Each structure stands twice: as C-alpha cells, then as structure tokens.
Length: 562
Image (cartoon, rainbow, N blue to C red):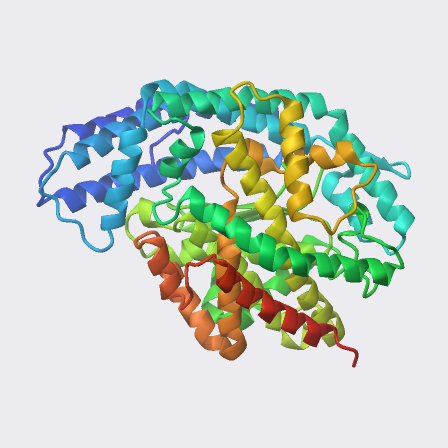
C-alpha cells in the first residue's frame, strides 16, 4: 500500500492511518496482511524522515533544513515512537500467530523493543538527537587555513599523505589545534549526553546503559564478554602485526619511530590521486562494480540518478554514510571525497551498504531490509575486498598494475591498523557505560582513552603530545552520535576477511555467496547470515590469528621487489 498524502511534518496526516491499524480486527488469518500494511506505513515515514536528514547533512548551515530536522526530532519522531509501541503491543498480543522463517527473528526483535520501550525515554531520545546534530554542526564547521586558503577537515587531511615530513606535521598540528580549540565544547556536549543515556537505561530497568543498549541494538548472538575475548584476540594477534607495520614505515622514513602525522603516508611514493572530480570517481567505481557483478553494477547506476552526494565542501556534515529510501527502492550515498584512494574505498564501502538494501529489497517487510549491523558491515567491508581485483585500469579501475598493487597492500595494512583502533573505541565505551563512576569527568575520559591507546596502539609515538592523544575520543563521531555502534566494524572486518579469503580461491563463488547472504536481509540470526556467505561468526585468537597470517603473507607478496 502506498501513502502519497503523508506530510512527515504534519502528524495529523499520519495519525488516522495509525488509528486505522489500531482499530482493525487482528486475527491469525489476517495478521500477515495487517503486518504488511503497517510495514508500508513505516517505510513511508522512514523515507520522508530520511529526506530531511539528507538535507541537513548536505548543508549544516541551512537554517530551514535545520528547522525541519528539529521539528522532526521534537514533534514527529516522539509520536512515531509512541505509535510504533502501540502497534507492536497490538501485534504481540496475538498469541496464535505462527511466524514463518522470515518473521521469527522479527518477532523476537519486536518483543525486545516493546519490553524496553518507556514513554519517559522519548523526550530524552529527542534531546540526544539534537545534541548529536550539534556535534555534527560543530565538527562540520571546522576548517584550517593553509597558505591563505580555507580548507575543510577532509581537504586538510590530504596533507597527511605528503612525502614531506614537515608538511605532514604542520597539517596534523593544525588539525589537532582546531579540535583542541573546541575541546571544552565537545566535553560539554558529551557530558550532557552521558547522564541522559544513563537515565534512559534506568527508566527501562537496566543497571547500566550497556545492558540497555545490548537489547536496543538486538545483540542476541554475542555478549560483552565476547567483546573482551575479541579485544584479547586483537591485542595478541593483530597488535604485533600492526606494530611491525609501523616499525617498517619508520625505517623507510629513516626515523626511529612513527609519529602520529606519519600514519597515513605511503612510503612507496607520492599519494595516489586517482581522480580529480566526483564524475571521474563515479565513472571509475561504476566500471569496477560492473566487473564485480553486472547486477551490482546496475544497482549503482540507479543511484547515479540523484542519490549520490560525494564531494567535500564547507558546511557539509563530516564522514560518510548510506541511507535507504524503501518506498523509492533506492539507497543514498553521502561522503566527502577530495581525490584520494580512500575516497574510492569509501564509495566501495558505502556501495556495499547500498547493495545490501537493494538486494534485500525483495523482502516484503520494511523491518527485514538490510540486516543486523554486524552483517551490514560485512556487506560494506566485504565489497571493498571483492572489488580489489578490479583496481587496475586494465580491469576497469583507476591504476597501473604497480599502483593497483600499492593500493591493495595499503588496504590490507589499513585493516590491520584499524582493528586495534576499533578495540580502543569499543573498550572505551564499555568502560564509560558500565564501569566509570557516576560523576565521571572529562579528565577521567581523557585518562581512560590514553590508557587504552597505550595498550592497543604501541606502535605510534605520541611523546610530547599528551593533549592530542588523550582527546582522541573527540574525533570519533560514533562515540557522540551512535553510542556502542563500533564493535560491529571489527566483527564485520573478520567476516569480510573471510569473504576475501574465499575470493582468493574462487572470486565468482565468493561474490555469489555474498549476494545470497545479502538477499536474506534481516530474516536470520547473525551466525546464519555469516554461514550463508560461507564464513563463520567467530572472533577468538585462533580465527583472528589465522586471518592475520594470511594478510601478512599477502602483504609480503604484494610488496616484494620485482
């Protein structure tokens, strides 16, 4: 059912549709039809809300877009949450409904969401949404001055890839100084968010926000202790390889250690500059997707008709994301491209998310699109690695064979060095939300971040740079805007590396398995989705160690002298 007359900012156009669903007689015989009608309404609301968020992220200085966003957050989403809870309760009261394989997990999610819902949390969620937008505005407005020109943070980050050590250090210090200039503001923002999150947990009957979020995020298949097991595996199996990579970089730079402004330099030569504008980026990635799989290439071609916003510009929200518009059947990719190889990786990554939505669009219910976040990130990170064979120009990509190998090696190094960073972010949040004192201070937060950095990132020398090191949590937006959403990247990277391992043996079969798993959407438990992709949901020392051995071997092969 379509809802063309919905005005997302006028709840009076939506409430009658909710009332109709609430008043309808619901039986086991008509439950699936009723559920579909509710799904269609939810999809329409999601799409309209997504367009508003798109506008505010495309221009954080657009006062009209911000006003619409604030009205959505303050007036509409609270009512939508209340309506959703009432509809869940009505559906869950139907005791003789027999779920199919495609609705069994959905029913479990509904039960969990209904059990933790509290009316008193709605205004807290509204306040947190607005505070998250304040973080985006604060960071999105940051610039530095470089040789008389104003540069956005992504543009300024290009200097960190320079072969000139002085240029790298100068840029890094300017970037850090810009964040430190807003240190008090960012501390205030987070310390305003923290008690609100803790109160939400208490309102729902949980002793900690971690316990609450474990249910809110639907983490049914692993526990906090499993995260600590993963951290342990990273510390023992990944950190030594990451440290060796940093040591090799330092030696190639003629230094005793890698400094923080050296972590992004490619010692193989000048930074890869594969394109000069967004059109070239789109065209090249289009060719690569066509090579990975023609059907995926068609998906991406559909996005090029108004569903991509790629270049960096002033007052654009930081980072990148993929949103889905379930009524249009299109995904939307937002990013801040500045002409680097990382931009190709970002577009491949967000393309994987887009493909997940578009492949799972055959699922009739809105809630079964995409999947659990731990597998959504397999879709994105797996795509980065499935596309690696097509980086060279003779395979449709951007580079000579030599530069394609450089990019391939850098991708593997980035995975190795990312996992310890992920462990810092995740372990930091476990501490904040389950272990830290009630009246934690900004100094406490800084100290814990610094301690974890020393544990997982020993290969980077921060001597004399304590303020920059300890405030690193300010520079990870997830900590502010989507609490606890980060271990998913690490768990998924282990899955993506297994997809890559399979592709080394049989690329076509690995792609087929990947697409089959994406098509299941959110209809299966996490381990079953991994299994559908012919990989395992595992994160112990043995699993991680075997993958690191493979990565190390491949790096030796890619970087061996000709």
